[in-house]
Length: 229
Picture 1 (cartoon, rainbow, N blue to C red):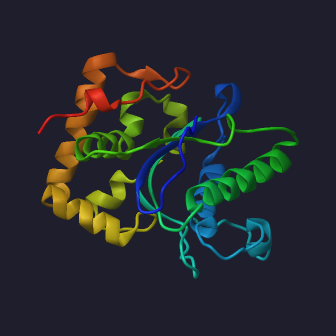
Picture 2 (picture 1 turned 180 degrees about the vertical axis):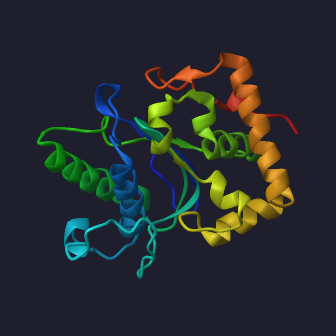
């Protein structure tokens, strides 16, 4: 639920899952299509559909660069088989809402046509939580960056996971904003120390609640449980 307006220049934890907890990625091609959509739809300029952009290509190009002003800056993300988490900074007024509408709407259309289905694919528009303190930011970024590690991912679905930890550990920012990524690594003293921080967050969360099934609702970190120091 969004009880307050999303403020430009502020950071937000954005998340959603498949309706009825269903998988939103049935195979690797679906995952790549969603990644492609993240890149193509993150721009102020209207671009039409992914289908129109890629109509002359037989395989989706997972990582492309957008040519217009971005709506949001990605700070962390994790795509799981039936849900996703983002840490986003809104760059223009209404940017997060516009980006999420294009992303979820476009992907739902693709998924429904491909699978001969109709109706909603995601649980509503999206959920958002304002990241209002440094301590909470530090916990949320670790939680999102390696979110797949707090879940029991079945072996047959392990390939349907895509997370920002790879970008940070390799200093190779593709979806993550280069400016935001370099800022994060600077704060934590480099990729090795940032990885250590994220691993510690995952350890703490798993100690608190154990590894959760993908069918369980996430017990999200709260302000009151933010790390001290």
